[in-house]
Image (cartoon, rainbow, N blue to C red; front, side, top):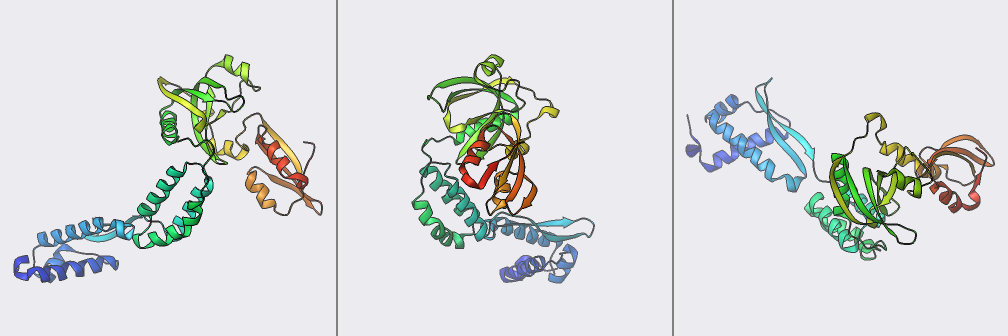
Length: 323
């Protein structure tokens, strides 16, 4: 039987390329068959397969695809399996960059850094220049939020506290009067809306709730803008919320407007505008109960006073009706 040395480097290279081509075309490799075909040992074929695996692993960054050579025990053969795609398409990367820029949620330095790494790490190298050119004007004229605060690490720490069900203690600058207050909270969610990241949390101090809030024994959390958290400490003390009382972030998000909390209520109005789809996008719980030449009669279930701000912003297109 021949050895790899007898075949020489060219023979080994041709053998590996042939096996690689078979795998890439969806075929299977049988070690015994390949060994007889090329006149080498099955150990040599195994080394060839390992080299193909190594090449596929090193080539992930260029192809954007994680391919592995796996052994099929049922058939006694090796085959190529595409585990996942790690690179985005040009259109996907462009869409993500545009959404990120439009969010206006981060400082200029943070935005530039994230866009750079997003393109470099998630797009194929040959597409980098094109994508950067498509976003460069909007990136150059990017307007950061007025608070100009770096808060990503605070947000991550909140996420850890949520995951581990630990109380947090914060110093929070209120919107009115710029007063800084201290709160002990049960954090339950992080939400993004209208340029800002928010934390939803339950206040632990019942006396504090009675003194400062209209809704006592509210079944829903208070909303805090994360960039307004001046100091935060994760406490070792854990909290417990029964599964039946768990915070349903998706359901809450559908019913809150402009991140203003408050009582759950049902509103009813006539919409006289042209795009009822825009109303349904803004109010995911909206239901059209009647439609005629005078417009759409809509009902929706919402939290708090944020809905009043939205209704006023629509001017004459919306007429509030009795519930």
